[in-house]
Image 1: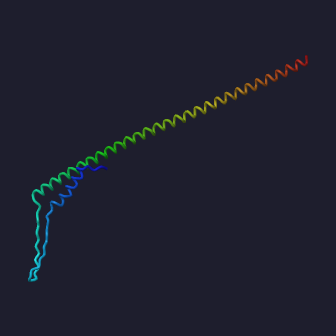
Image 2 (image 1 turned 60 degrees about the vertical axis):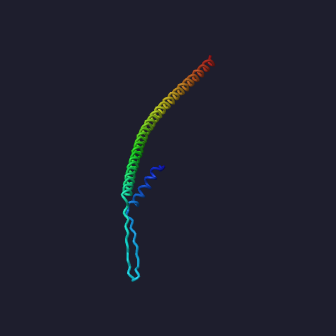
Image 3 (image 1 turned 180 degrees about the vertical axis):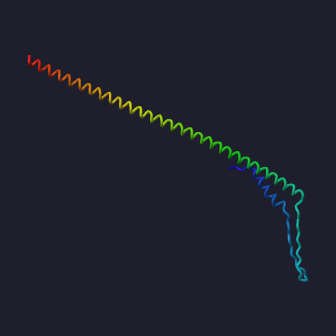
Length: 150
């Protein structure tokens, strides 16, 4: 994550405003020659200029916070939109894969039926050829017998 120079300055200003706008209090304890103790408390209030500077820093900090919130919301919205697009693409791909699987199953069933038909036709041809060969052999045998008898 990149942090701009302006952001760092604004953060420093907010931190300074929190410390610059407070009252500075100093306590001093002294002992008199008679043995009595005297405590002196000195409070220094920040000047009006310091208060104004603090207010400006607070305003800048609030403005920066609002911008950061807006940027975060924009990033979140963009991520949600991208997620929705990815979900839709996944559903679309799933539907295509299901359709391809159904088509493959239909093609396999058709190929199985075609193969079975082709094998049956080949078997029928072989039976017919075998019958023709047997008929030819019988006729040849009969012809040979007849020619021997003649």
